[in-house]
Amino acid sequence: MHPTSDSPPGPGEVPPVRPRLLLSMGPGVAERLLDGRHHTRLAALARTDPRLVAHDLADPAPGVAAALADAEVLLTCWGAPPLTDRVLAAAPRLRAVVHAAGSVKHHLTDACWDRGIAVTSAAAANALPVAEYTLAAVLFANKRVLHSAHRYRDLRAPHDWPRELDGAGNYRRTVGVIGASRIGRRVIELLRPFDLRVLLYDPYVDAAEAARLGVGPVPLDALCAESDIVTVHAPQLPATRHLLGARELGLMPDGATLINTARGSLVDETALLPELTTGRLHAVLDVTEPELPPPGSPLYDLPNVLLTPHVAGSLGTELHRLADHALDELERYGRGRPFLTPVRPEDLHHSA
Image 1 (cartoon, rainbow, N blue to C red):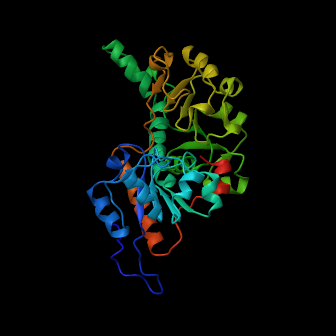
Image 2 (image 1 turned 90 degrees about the horizontal axis):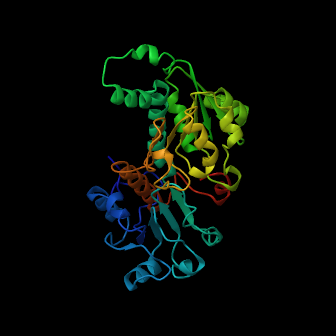
Image 3 (image 1 turned 180 degrees about the horizontal axis):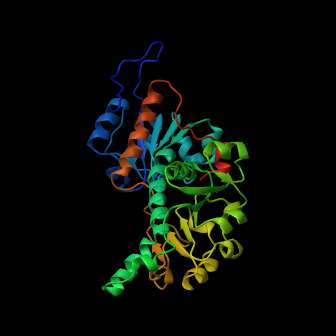
């Protein structure tokens, strides 16, 4: 049960206030993000019209323009329009942005940081379903579930499965995690109960931090060469474009699996496709470049590829976790507390 602004303040705590708030996100997002319980709690925490959702702030409708001029807080999510100098000039009272999703790079600008606007995001909450998807992919890939399912469908007859799957299993296999991001760290945590060796490549993590995470820090080449599973959790940055190219993919052992739930640009798809079409490597791809592969792409039909339409992140009921997190942060703001998960401009240079 979540606390509300009606709960009494603690000793020495600032009494709660209800700031004026405007919802700003893409069409249809608010309806999926907020259910009746959230609307009730939002009304207790802020003064807002939950039916008024700003899809465009650069050329807003009259009702949106008035709400923007009065808003102290923006509650944003996917599809939120950019907060440019022009938008901020029309929002003189704006003091905080509460983002009910992961990255804020798509709508925050330098002007926001220059003005000292406080920002928080639900990136930590959004990391959980991605890590869960990855855990499932790791365990299924080592068990060769996709291969077995395809073969079983084709054969439809008795078969010596133990012999065909003699090299399968999750006991003492090696999983290489690229990137100690929020998602990468959660993946490491979820893998801990299993009899797996976990390696990590992240240039920002030193040996002491790796030891605290319980992983072996290795260079990228070593991770690729030693891992049965390579799973990608690095941010999309100019430095990470095609982080896994022909050389790195070529180092992966025969029969190894690549899992990508980060961004398609981190993997050189022109180098990956030959490895997949020959059957030397397997892949679980929730993201590609372009995000929607062309209709003729072999990724749709290769039996050693599990291709999903960018669904590892929050969807369905998981959106309500993002809303809960955002409203928790809104309550903290109303009570004069610092955000629990603040976003700082210096963090954006090496994060999603």
